[in-house]
Length: 199
Image (cartoon, rainbow, N blue to C red; front, side, top):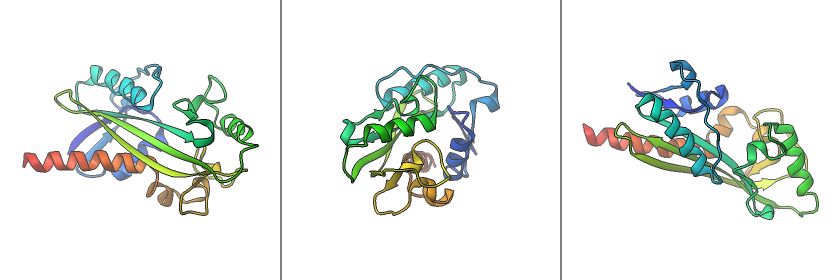
């Protein structure tokens, strides 16, 4: 089994990643190994924030680890909220306020209001080498919230080719097409190929 430390203590995110990175990988949270540091995400890109988190963790654990950062990029807002997605409405993380502000800012924009979710994963291997992986799902922002599942902007985002918002989908359905799923699969393919080359 190969242990990978994921720089997140978000239980929902950890379970989602564990379901994709199954055997022979074991995903461990920082909290589970006694690491409580939480670096400030001060970069102006998703890649930058993911690297800040994984570098801080690797410095402590000196073992393979990875971090992610995700943003919603709306075409009519020139890519905003982007890297500021989690704290779009205020300095505090408030999903409801973020959605409310986004809908207000798009109130005069006609549909379809094109957008995409993008996740970037930064991984540091045993040798300290850094690798980046990306997952993207395109879609649109609807005019009102629909659905009670998910989190963040899920209730106002309909992925391309679907009729339901992410918040109307069951967890397994969302996770099979999501931006984070695609990024984690890219990481897994990289890990699998490296493992195979070592055999």
